Image (cartoon, rainbow, N blue to C red; front, side, top):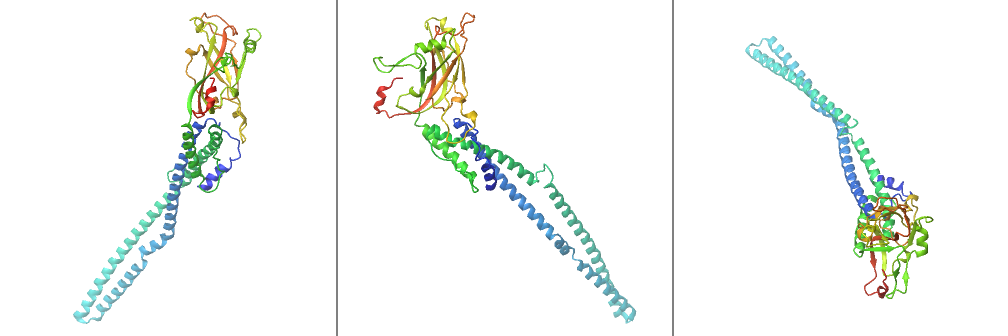
Length: 416
């Protein structure tokens, strides 16, 4: 069993990562399930091996003992002995009858004749017994041969080889997938939670047990790390400036008026806006990961109920994570864009939605946003995007973070 696990895992140990390490919750759940199944496969293989070995030894023992057991039960010497006794009694009866010694000779002749008849009965009984013994052992041999043939019958429950090969194929599939996911978990827990617990390479002894323990320990460590996190919603304004001091003399904005108007100009703008969140979060925010995202639009007349019905759509391109310390498949390096439609005023937006491509991603990076060419109005007519009607696009992030101690003086400069 250990050799099988080593063979299946070692052959893929140099492959690039095939699973996205950021999907660590799903990976942990799946890997745990797969490894639990592998433990079941191992138990089933051990049970099959026990049954197959026991059955093979029993059949071998039967073959080796068959002739000896038949000879013991047939006991051909018994019939020969009875034949000798009968022949002797016949001769004695004949001899006593010919002597003519009166009543004594006749008596001995009768006794010998009776003994001969008794021996004849014994011989007949012995011959019947031998036929029954032969029939018994013939039937038993047929049974054993028929049973043995079932071990080679395709699809039969007693075909232990076929059953074992089928379980081995399941084991190969599940342990291979579990190992690939464990490798992604290895790097995911370091990137997301700063947990450095390197996955050991495949080895020939007890590697399945090691993988089970590794995944269980990873789940425990991540749960402990998650207990230190806080959940909050953060709003990123692309155009609207924010005050960085109480007097508002210091402000921060991702796009100024000039760049905003250039991007959303109805005639010349390409609709591409963005923000660099490397400088979005103060030093009091430590480890950070995204759980969901939504968006809202700031309109020119937020108190006008008709204008409030206008909506737009955007495509959000998340930042590309920095390179991993191991080879990873190319399609995992770039995050899939997120499409958000029906974007209106902030008080009308839905709660942030979880998307696979941004799950657990550290938001501190460059985000690119493509605004749709279309702007939906309540009048049912065609309207294109324009900086006149779209005053700002806001991204609403649902985040989990570890933060500085409440006593950290840096909190006094908090400017969200």
